Image (cartoon, rainbow, N blue to C red; front, top):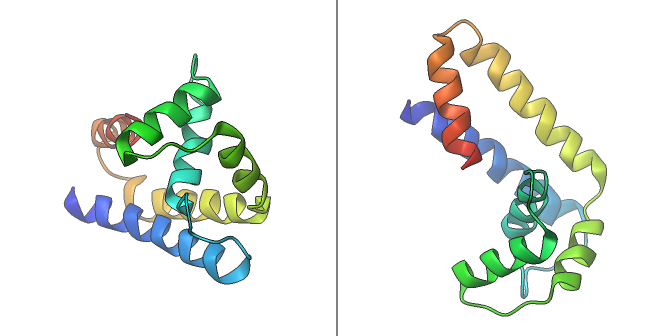
Length: 113
């Protein structure tokens, strides 16, 4: 189980490195990881952008405006999200698909929450 988490973490590290290396996005107030978190949390039902920003600000002990997250998120090209999707899909097909389905559900629940 720990190996699966390490592999997923490596996928996210890879995408954040690609974003840093291939774009002009700076890591001043908001990290790329926080921007990705902002984007993924917004896909949850009943989550508003303001609630998400408040949660991230609280966890980071910072005060950053919602529009700053929005602008920085818009500076990440969609090709990086596609790369992330393809990487996770390939990981799933190679490592997890033939394993116990309950383990997969458990992992997804842990990642999502």
